[in-house]
Length: 257
Image (cartoon, rainbow, N blue to C red; front, side):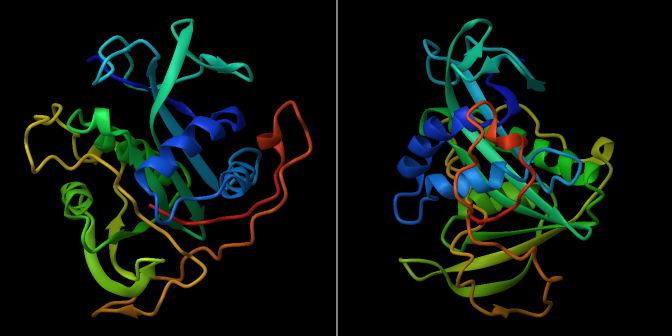
């Protein structure tokens, strides 16, 4: 199968990821500092985060047909990402936080020219594999109540709605639907299936936000409250190591989607 290559997100990916973030989530985009603080938790023996990016060769057209890969790759460096030795373009990213047996989908985003390719499902599959590696019993997420495209994707993977958070997404004051998944063994996870038809309005790819505005999440309303979510900390200053700031083990969080 051809398509974008998935690999671990590193500090040198923040600039292109931030550009895509602002394009897809103009009202509640994460700041640069939020990404730095998330990646500061993504490495080391006490890591609690896992972030991945999807990339295609910079000269690839819509759908990234020039790039191949179904798993994580590592062909990149501080000089910028690369696929098969060529400059690359990031077309998606996703992140997971884990604490106390509970996983939390922090964000999933797919560039518009990749909608309909199944990339959102691949990113979510990767997060769920990592939730299993973190020994999470459950995975939670929040998604805008008006983002039915993302909700269909999550339902396809077994997420079930358990309540709402009123006014969770600011500044638009949009409610969040809280969804929960009981984690399965990766071998039992749902197959992402073939890429969806780009013309199919039911295709679940796109800006699949799963969390935002953690500073004022609102009370959960619904028949069943989830376990407490990992507590966000204020973003720390940028790590001072110019070679690889993500090797530091200090933590912080911001949730999005």
